[in-house]
Amino acid sequence: MVYRITGVHAGIIGITRRMLSTTAYSSDRQIELCAAYKAVEQQVSNSINGCGRSRADVLLLAVSKLKPASDLMILYEYEGVRNFGENYVQELIAKSKQLPQDVKWHFTGTLQTNKCKDLAKIKNLYAVETIDSVKKARKLEESRAKFYPDASPVRCSIQINTSYESQKAGLCKEEEICELVEYLISPDTKHLQLRGLMTIGSWEVSHSVSGENKEFSILVGWKKKLDAKYGIDLELSMGMSSDFEQAIKQGTSEVRIGTDIFGARLPKNVPTD
Image (cartoon, rainbow, N blue to C red; front, top):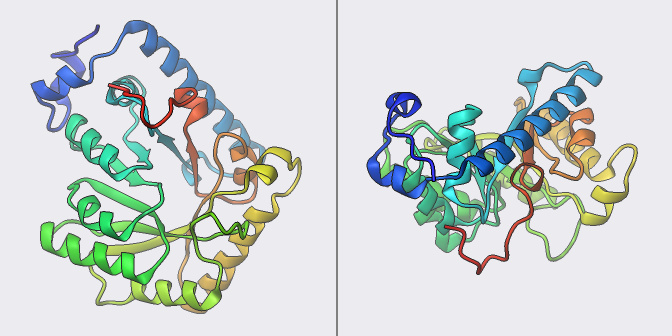
């Protein structure tokens, strides 16, 4: 196992010996993971160049759910990655204690009301990308005000259910979407900041469409409508390993990549550390 105690780690914000002991990794995994990340980064760059956009227009978010903290530490140290996405609150809490303090944590999983308080306790929580109710937004706002009153606002995206699948989280009714937008842009909401819209496309469309993705088009339509109504400029988070190139063509601001970077995931009940 490789332990980095000096050199690069000397400049890492908030690194501790405990972090080092829980983020040890093998050189083989380092080579494998860095190669995978570089390959995805090249694909993202090629897609951006192919549609005349700037590389700075699109964030590559590494989504590491059910992968060990050591994987994140490899990308942090060798590839300079600072933005990581997690789908489970408890896993995010654990990893936030193992990784340096300048990591920008994005919560990308289904958000439950009873987990909002726990999520808000993470000091370097950067974004919550799956807000789908005023109730949850209010709980996050109240909790951040209590725990970190002077911290920068957490960036929030509203999850839109563009596939209209009943089992999938997200909003699709205009009145509910507008109610949530109005809460997040209210001057009374000081600890959350509305930044964009997010969607998770259906498996069938994501894996079968060769041209324009109709579900991404729906999200783009919501952006245009809400931008015009409220005088805002919303970002878009759409596209994962199977469909991120098309998402870039259709204007996404962020692609959320897990499998293509980290490899296939183990079942949730299998230990990863």
